[in-house]
Length: 274
Image (tube, rainbow, N blue to C red; front, side):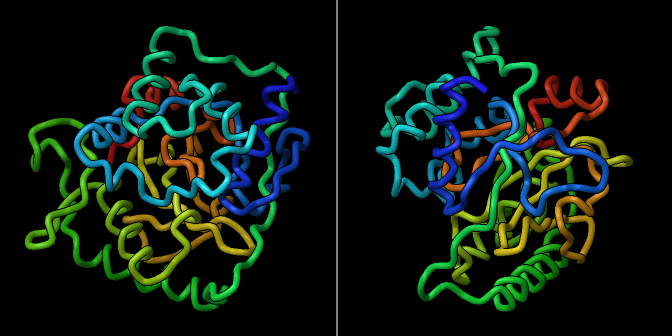
């Protein structure tokens, strides 16, 4: 692991978690938290949302450690420069443009994934039991209230990240995820412990879910099921994740090796298809 990657370990401490590099994942030894791989571009639909809705784009930001060297190096490695004050829209535009030009920093072939350890508890934070209850209630309620419909039929475009209209809620996978994130934050769930992930579902194809970081692991809120499960128990091929606390930074899933066809579909669609 090079010096830039080593400094990058400190960047995700902004989400309140300790990090350790470990050997590649093997067998059933899946870690409790989603491991972080190489930096990746943000999904095209997410980047487009950031052009028109700064609030939804910046959900969960925690810049309490924005001046730390690790943050600056992580942003530089992602291709968005060392200035942590760069707006989310500008940062994503720079990062995705650099990736499109083939200039993104390539990881070392033997680079180990970054494993996230349990985040520390903060004074006044809801208990683990309370947090999980919030997840179950919000996941079930949003899944019930929103009518599933593809973006093409609602907005006339193939991919459009948006919080559903509250008077007539409908949407596809990422719209469910956005709604759940907003509602959980409104109920007091720590904002920096909620983030999106793009996966490949065996029957649905590209799919977006909301990830909630609890003290004992990462759990998935999915519009296709009322059940809250650990990320390692979900029957997905994992592609990319938003980094907690830094919504303009995205990364591959460390140690995950999706089939080549899944990776090609993710790259072609920019991630997030419902």
